[in-house]
Length: 144
Image (tube, rainbow, N blue to C red; front, side, top):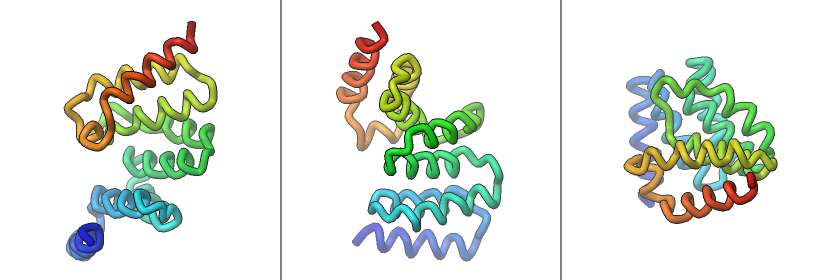
């Protein structure tokens, strides 16, 4: 119900400002969370068309690869993201998880540790700090 209303408001916003990249990301994220990956991909790709290396657009595409269990493809996209500019901190989660799935536990540790530096980020409103800490400890055990 609320996502339908949000989608309508975002679409109205895009009609007023069709170059607002974050609105495309918000719409893409709604479809991603609904598991409508093809539609989500369309919105993420639009941001890349408008701004070639838009971090959250690349992250959206990487999330789709992750959800499709294409971890190496996700990592390739994640490595191309410039984190010196504003970006969604869930980047570190997807990088850590993809690295863990491919057996790169050292990178997983680094990414979980970085994610935990942003404990006040919106990411932790819907994800458990305890679970991330547990995954960090598990990754550390695999590096020993």
